Amino acid sequence: MFIIGFINLFMRILKKIINLFTKKQKIDKEIEDIQNKCPHFHKSLKSVRKRLDSTTIVIRWVCDECCLPIGYPNDKEQQNYIK
Ligand SMILES: [Zn+2]
Image (tube, rainbow, N blue to C red; front, side, top):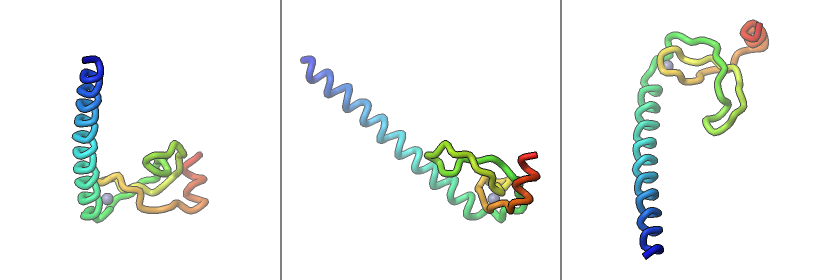
C-alpha cells in the first residue's frame, strides 16, 4: 500500500511538472513571436542576466517595448551607464 501511495504521488508530481513545462514552452514561444515582430524602436541600457540560466549580470541595449537584449554597448556607453 505504501508503495502504491508513493507511485501515485510521484505520478501526480510528474504530471504537474509536465503540464507546467508545456505551459512554459507555450509562453516562451509567445514571447519569442512578439519579440520577432517588434521593430525595436526604443532601446535603453540595462543590466540583464547573461543567459536565462546564469547569475552573471551584464550591460546590454534592451528594447523598451519587448525587453529583448538587442545590442552590446561600447566602452564609453558602458562607462556612462556605470556612473
Ligand atoms: Zn523590441
